[in-house]
Image (cartoon, rainbow, N blue to C red; front, top):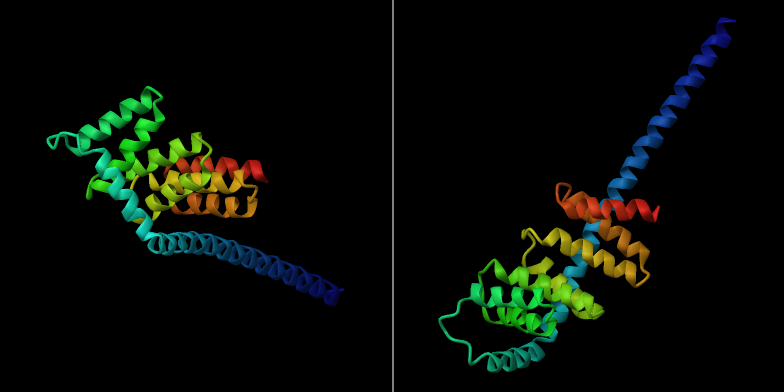
Length: 200
């Protein structure tokens, strides 16, 4: 009898140990998935940067053409004035004019809060025009050049939306997990979490 009780206790301890090792294994797998999502995001940013460097000549040509279009802008108008004009055009749903002004800000100014915001709005306008490639390009620029900007979490989430719209649920899921894990206090994380729950 004593031997049977001892055997029963040993079996219970073995099962508990097995459950604990399963839990630890599950947690390790989750950590690895999060690291993969983070690395994939960094890889996308690096690939985009390489692509941008290889297309540098095209950008220089476009920049010169854009500068010529704005030669009539009074030199006294600062970036804030141009940004305000772009926002007014956006509010009037004159997307072409807004996009042109946001592009001008990005290409002709530096060290301003308005540059990452301009990239974000260019991407938003491009999404509304269903120009997915241009939207993704500007979101990736925002992510790469301004990783600490307050719009970057939402830019990451929108890249996930693009993946989802293209039917790539795996990449979308990884991007949403990255947003949830990297920016837990941002509104973009709750939006991404909601989308993750809907994908389950």
